[in-house]
Length: 93
Image 1 (tube, rainbow, N blue to C red):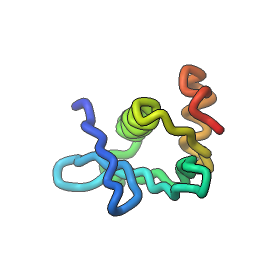
Image 2 (tube, rainbow, N blue to C red; image 1 turned 90 degrees about the horizontal axis):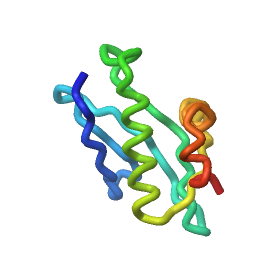
Image 3 (tube, rainbow, N blue to C red; image 1 turned 45 degrees about the vertical axis):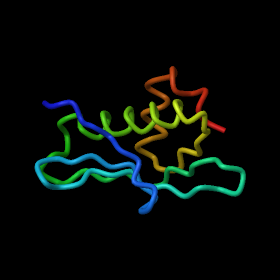
Image 4 (cartoon, helix red, strand yellow; image 1 turned 45 degrees about the horizontal axis):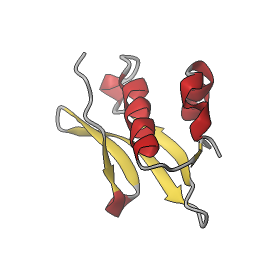
């Protein structure tokens, strides 16, 4: 499994990574207070169950941390990821 390069595509309000020409993504809304509401995670079907979703979330959360932002993890996948990785709990508003 390759390491994903996760980028913040601000024009589309999503974090994304390329998987053999297909896009894995996390959609977000920026709230009035600057918090990012991470509301949808999507990995192309042929890549599901291989750990790419976790890599995508981790990459996005590392960027959130670097940008000194907070999140609202309204996507169930991201909420579970944070429960399993408490080192990211400080990012939750």
